[in-house]
Image (cartoon, rainbow, N blue to C red):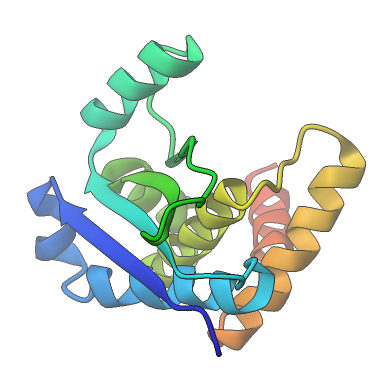
Amino acid sequence: MNASLCTDIAIDSPHWTAALADAEALAAAAVDAVWRRAGDNAGDAEVSIVLGDDAMIRQLNSRFRDRDQATNVLSFPADDDGSCDMPHLLGDIILAYETIAREAQEQKKPIEDHFQHLCVHGMLHLLGHDHETDTEAMKMEQLEVAILATLNIGDPYVIEAAAVKRQA
């Protein structure tokens, strides 16, 4: 039996619906792709996604990471061992529209692709992946690229490297 992933999405900024009408479907598809590829799949799970803005994410980043600045995505793993009969709560992913839109424009990539990449990135963090060391970063990036390919999204790191060269 395949374990299922329940995705709870809250839109807390009107920017998302104004600029990316299918944001909920894109986010759900991205985290589901991660779950199918990298998830435990030993039981049902739940993830919460909040589509916020720079002000929201800056406040969270300041409070929980001591960084008084906006960022594109934050992940907060739940302290849930999945031992009860309820779906295992993986945690929360919060995304900031303005930062994501700006980055997509700067990197000359579709906002939909960048948004899904960050959903994948956030979900991998909830599953315990990290990029604190070069080895961890390379492993996580390879996993992201493989998962994004299942969503018909090209390697974002190749695109980012090309954008950096253009800006230099």
